[in-house]
Amino acid sequence: MAEWGKHLAGVEGLVLDISGVLYDSGGEGGGVPIPGSIEAVKKIKTSGLKLRFCTNETQATRDKFVGKLQHLGFDIGVDEVTAPAPAACRILKERNLRPHLLIHDDLIPEFADIDRANPNCVVVGDAADNFSYKNLNAAFQVLIGLENPVLISLGRGRYYKETDGLKLDVGAYMKALEYACDIQAEVVGKPAKMFFQSALKEMGIEPHQAIMIGDDIVNDVGGAQHCGMRALQVRTGKYRPCDEHHPEVKADGYVNNLAEAVDVILKQLHK
Ligand SMILES: [Mg+2]
Image 1 (tube, helix red, strand yellow):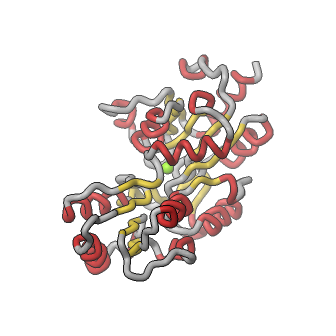
Image 2 (tube, helix red, strand yellow):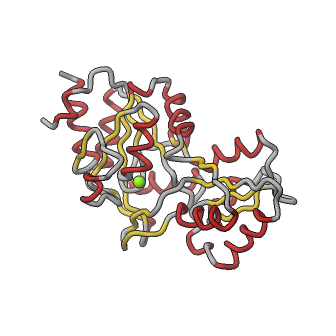
């Protein structure tokens, strides 16, 4: 038994990252499930543990993204998913911010009821092919022209894994805009503490009662631990062996995949 598996008393819920934990995105059909993950989600749902999915995915609306996962075979509903775009929309409304959007075309419907005339902030997401010089420069020009530039970034990941390899993520472009304008972005999504807290609030549990499972050592594991949760890193998705010797973040445990994590957790809790 791995050391982490001996200290599971009091665990009431699991928070799962999606990309790299449930499936690898990309290619025909939008991705492939990671072996054992479909069954692992079913097991969690029948175990009595609370479950929440917490993703930084911003290449599609939450509805469309969840639809794709359902099509791949996952038992998952839109209301079980914490995602950056709906959280950003709440912030925009609260603060009367009108965004210039530098995001993926498929995410634009999430901002349908947000006033975007005469922008007073920039929202950047994982825009993929929309990260052209022209588009980055247009976002830069909005920011540099504001008295108090506000840059909201939907996550700050460095890279993610698709079926054909690692891909640059929003964090690299967020940093470019920060550098050019000498500002600090506000991150909505992992690793922001508020984002994890909103997922826990939906579950009705405290940080010490939850375990985060993700493939990103900094944004999933480090972010969750910073919020007071325990966190496991899976050796799937963007995982690289050097993550286990990360200079700043040490996971509470490392597991080969979600299926292994769930088996250990359920075995211990049902003792
Ligand atoms: Mg991931």
